[in-house]
Image 1 (cartoon, rainbow, N blue to C red):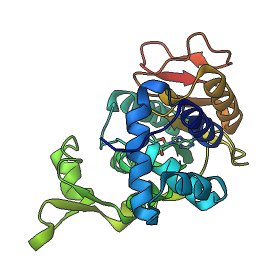
Image 2: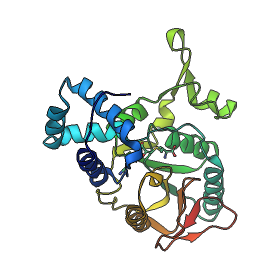
Image 3: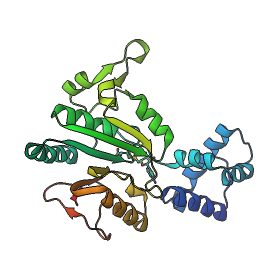
Image 4: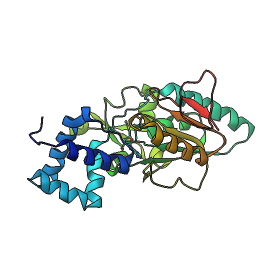
Length: 266
Ligand SMILES: C[S@@+](CC[C@H](N)C(=O)[O-])C[C@H]1O[C@@H](n2cnc3c(N)ncnc32)[C@H](O)[C@@H]1O
């Protein structure tokens, strides 16, 4: 635990800052977590006084970004909640039989890239044409995503034939790591994007995945996010959320898809 003392007022203004910048709600139960994150940023910025750090944070956009980076939860892994991905790919295959085309997919809140790479290898395996826009608020996770190097633990759910086909095994000191092959990387465009403040791209998507991030938002923020994502989808397009998330009790225009978990349609 950190030795920093935060008054309720300071906690409130910090959580307000996090909320207004990222939509993430940090309640008082997260006080210790927040303190440890501040201590981490103080070490990185070499600022020894907590008050000086707060002043520095208030006047520095880059530091606000770094700070938000440390408080966001980036947990992800390959083939996470893959049933909805498989069903989405089945739907695209059916559509592809009717008219062959390139499918545009947006992984909003893609974290370290595990999600878009998992989608890409399965799309490639089915011979579908596609491009993926993969975005996140955090530049550090995007850097990891663009590097494409992961521990074997992170890829343990990837079926072995796909692991052999689309990843390179590390050697020597890197034996516990794999690297996503360049061919897979070429289908994905990684970009910084804040779901609560950036305007959605002009292009329309066949699929938007926004999984395991809205769980950190309140209803007001989630409603705003899902409604702007709705506009970024093509008519008939597919919207996928995380298994622990729900659109119940929110105002939206999506139709739920029968027998398909966490999946909606425009
Ligand atoms: C738990 S990860 C989910 C990753 C992936 N979608 C999955 O399901 O495995 C949540 C991600 O949301 C990102 N995030 C948080 N607030 C965001 C915002 N306002 N806009 C865009 N991304 C955000 C975080 O940086 C983090 O990488």
